[in-house]
Length: 225
Image 1 (cartoon, rainbow, N blue to C red):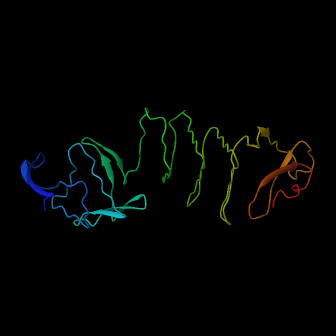
Image 2: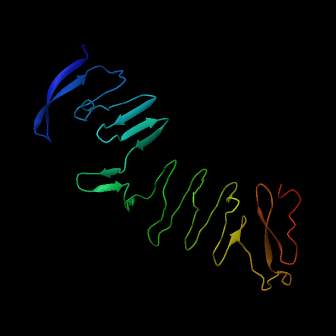
Image 3: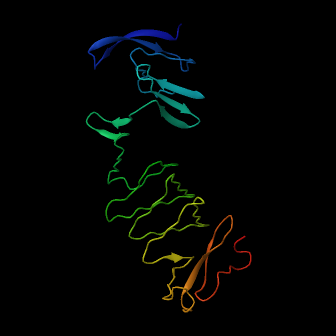
């Protein structure tokens, strides 16, 4: 009991004195902590470190809780989540519009879950990563005046069996250099030798390739395998 101390502490919000239990040891091992006031303080000038294979912070009145496990922070049984200061909220889960201050030019994160990311009007949006993966449960939609996808190794576009990949643009370039793909005036693409026919490999890993406009879609040997 030498590491347990009881003190009276003035609470500025209630204007009353509260009885505070102080742990004076450097490390305390506890299975559960129940704070009647709902507040747990760290030492003055020191960090409060809570360490465990699974940490649960809960409120019995609402059944909501915060779970920390395997490097993931998760809220359970909560209908609302707000980040705010004394004046206004910065973020609300019911109104999830998160504005980035114009002074912030770069954001780094391992994962983003959202329904939309956009840059300010007439400003560019850059995504520079080592390995980028985009996944949408109902689809992925890109819209821009100009879009440039550049990768050191490869760019892969995949969809479900009944899915669709559609490009709607005036100009489209493929390859290591900007190579324009002109369209033939012939609907059957049999008359113009200046045009290129865009073909796709029918394989487990479909690939796009081009042939002359008056040639059949025959890929080079081993290209589609």
